[in-house]
Length: 103
Image 1 (tube, helix red, strand yellow):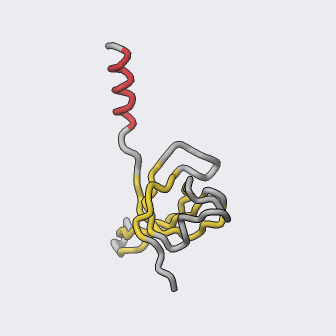
Image 2 (cartoon, helix red, strand yellow):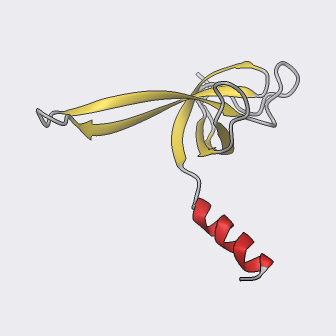
């Protein structure tokens, strides 16, 4: 097996990163936003459909508080799994799918 074949196999074994779609609930940190992802799932024993909520800290490179804020609270964003950036951050903002409406 040549060197290029082994590196290709290593890259293929990683697979695709997980992605989630959620709403930005906090953008008060520098280059970090908190994204809330909601999903509906049936309870394992009783079968009742329930809404489950998970909060992820995601790295937003363009977001730099307070200078230029491109990711606002209420925006719908796509986040992808990445290598750990800090103690809690394992996700990054890929793109903003929908901007928050001004109210």
